[in-house]
Image 1 (cartoon, rainbow, N blue to C red):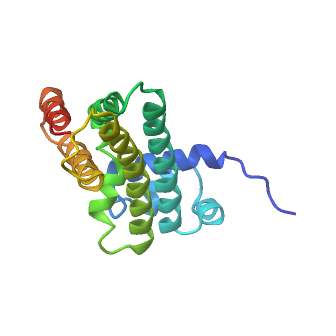
Image 2 (image 1 turned 30 degrees about the horizontal axis):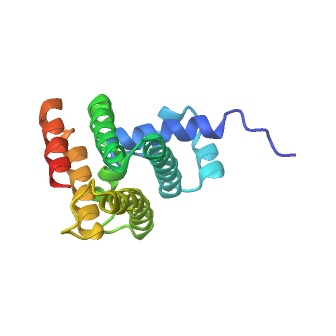
Length: 192
């Protein structure tokens, strides 16, 4: 007869996500994970598989939440310009508030793992494409309505915005101030 889990897998997955977010994948040991998650090694392996599988599940959890927050901003905006400006401002706000949590798990993983971990790279690329699709749609709509310049392709402007987002995420981990990041958003909006 199998034992009933004495923990909520969603709660402990959130705890794992937080430690990977704080420390990174490589610096997080299995002992760090079991200590943070409050479960035994056997339970970790039985529920989530390997450390790598647990990390991928945590990354998926983070991606889903991040994408949903961004989607909410786009669906609630009255115009393409408002959508993009609010999305970028929300990213700055999120980054600055989470400074204690060490930036963005996706951006951190992009730098740490994507070059040599095909599973992480695939998830990060999937997230990038989904985020870019939100911005591209708004840019296309803004070009059609005359809110945005039309002498650049939607693909080029989307690439510019995504690159800016990654820069905002990285700079939020440094001594950059809110005003400096807000200036970057303001200039980006003037470029559009």
